[in-house]
Image (cartoon, rainbow, N blue to C red; front, side):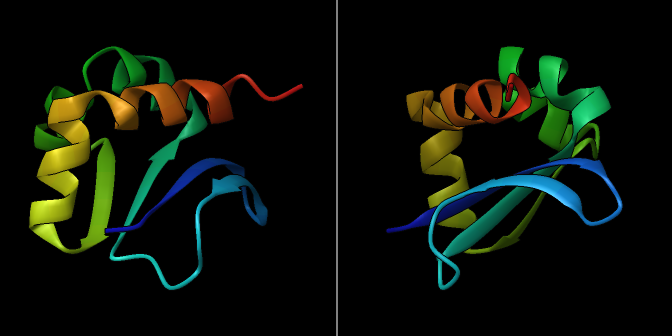
Length: 78
């Protein structure tokens, strides 16, 4: 299972982590990244965190905390 995370700061300005052929692509706007890192499952249900691809892979990374870690890391880029 592979996941690509994207935090979008603006048009054509996004921080990306993960392979291009990932099973699921998770994206969130930078403005919503703090809330998504704190509670990614809630952000997904509110429509702030978007996902394309395998729902099973998405639920796994939401449950094990790796989504929150990756989003937090990408949102705090230098």
